[in-house]
Image 1 (cartoon, rainbow, N blue to C red):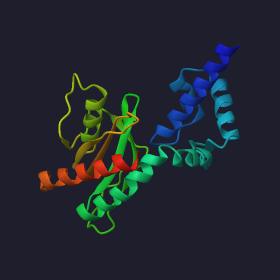
Image 2: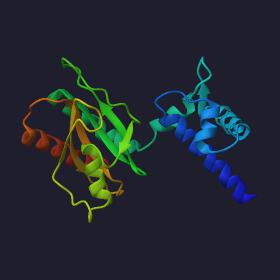
Image 3: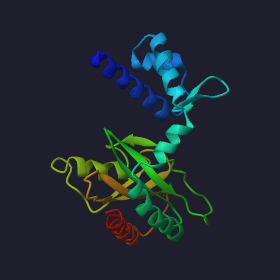
Image 4: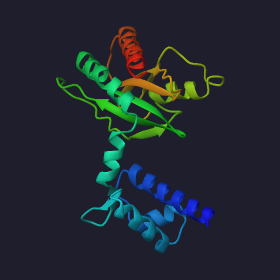
Length: 215
């Protein structure tokens, strides 16, 4: 019984991950297919998630993350969010570029918190919760170096062009937390010529302040 209960919990959590990570609302049959289970079981899992307000159905019946999940997400990595937000705000306004903190989640990089500049001709949105593989993009490679420093020795910073999204450039530096969770501080912007050295110095200074404030 314990193993069956653990398997059910695991499937329920995986269903929640699939719904939360999908770029479009999923149907219950799609959840069943992705989990490799019968539709009746998928309906029971989804119903349980709905009962706890972790999942809701939109007007078309598609599944989306519910308000309870949003509330829980606000409390995730609270200290890091609190420490990072003032620095991200300062960077976004001074550099005129979207600034964000990304962290390691399994085999992927997930954006934890982001701030867009208020005064800019054009800005790049970086939605919290968005994710991509650690092998692509500047934040991913910074985190990859923290996960596997022997194979991927750390650089002072990472720079990427047109990797995660075409037409965008990202610069990232490491944030070294006492918790040991691989984390990076980055900016993303429409590709253009900028002073890389001075920008990296700004990011590094902010990263050190975030590290101190998050202890």
